[in-house]
Image (cartoon, rainbow, N blue to C red; front, side):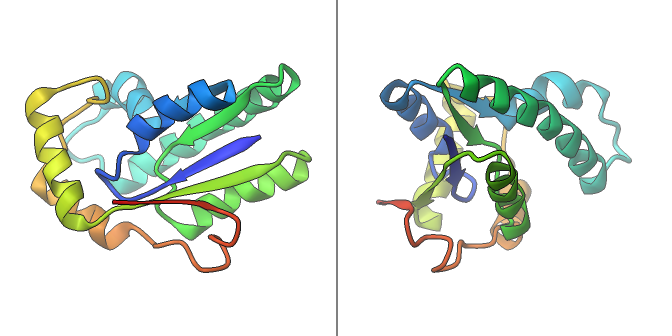
Length: 162
């Protein structure tokens, strides 16, 4: 099974993923960690959003291969990979359908105020889920970038509110 974790920046996806993996015998794919280790060291000042999206697409091809291997081992895949856009979520739903895998969406529907507090705290404390600092500009960019899941997407979803 593939678990799609959806929520805007600071919603608690990584913390939730770490709890969920113990409940479902799951493996967590955390894009923030991949970005920090694989991509950030090579990023230049002129590299923008398209530069990141291209690398994310390639990383997700590797993830998809691993998901199929994990499925054969009866290990769930937990995707903490952003999934901010409908098209990104749909990409993984189609992948699951093409490979006869079940999908469950988990939507962390957390207010902007709480998420912002969490980001500030995470930036300061640099705890377990910290990979890199999220600036005010990054946070606000994601507010505009994020597409809230539709009612159709949420029909059988787990919805977490705070």
